Length: 118
Image (tube, rainbow, N blue to C red; front, side):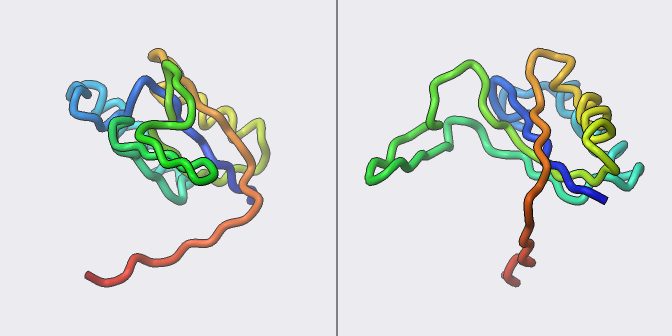
């Protein structure tokens, strides 16, 4: 089965300090649904845009590469038989219905390393 990355675009991180309990519950419910359906293989919520640092050439700057009203707030990997099904799954993400958006891209390859013991 093919893997697809679903990039979540929003004004800021869904788990940011300004997120309401209702917003958090919407995203948590969506994640549980994907887990129960067996199609999500990994998910990562990113910290607030205020924590971003960008590197371009020798320049290191605070913030994202581009100034915009939406930033990548997180991403997850799903498995689906084809792009149409991946789009159907990704389209259920709450951010796509409440002011943000998602981008779906086929995964060309992957590497996952287990975190080191602490």
